[in-house]
Amino acid sequence: MALAMGLSFTSCGDDNDDKDTICINPGSTQVYSGTMTVTYEGENYATDNTIVSMTGEEGGKTVKLLFNKVKFVPQMPVSLDIVVPGVKAVAENGGLSLSGDGIVPLAMNRTFEMYSVKGLSGTVKDGKMTLSLSFGSFPVTYKGTLAE
Image (cartoon, rainbow, N blue to C red; front, side, top):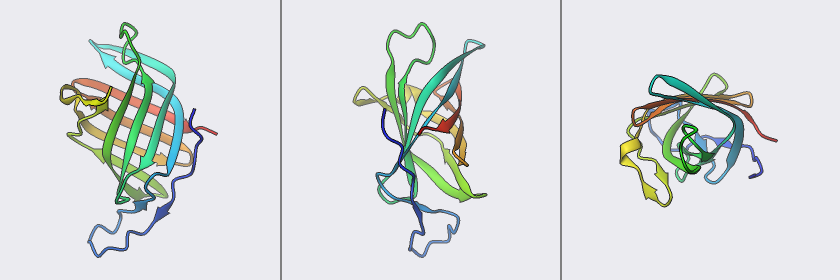
């Protein structure tokens, strides 16, 4: 498992009007362990000990989320590493507010337009991450705690 390093927040230094946007040092990563719940055909499937890594991207205003070795439902034949790039990160209430819509995820070195991320919203604060999003038509929630 990757070692958790604190994300470093800095001011962006450009003259945009988006005063709440902060910069996150590219390459700095936080690793969370928690429960991912997927709704499929009206049933909720919860998977404990799901690892999600959050890494600052180039430019410092977005993060990349990596869902490590996930199976969305028990009958899924393989576990996948799913990357969701370009998630907006904004300083809010002493933490981060995460958001994104229409983001095409990556897995197995290719894009998966069919499972585009919709309605991503979440927070990172006090060592906890909460996410709500849909991969295509499948609603997903995640609640995790910063791994040591």
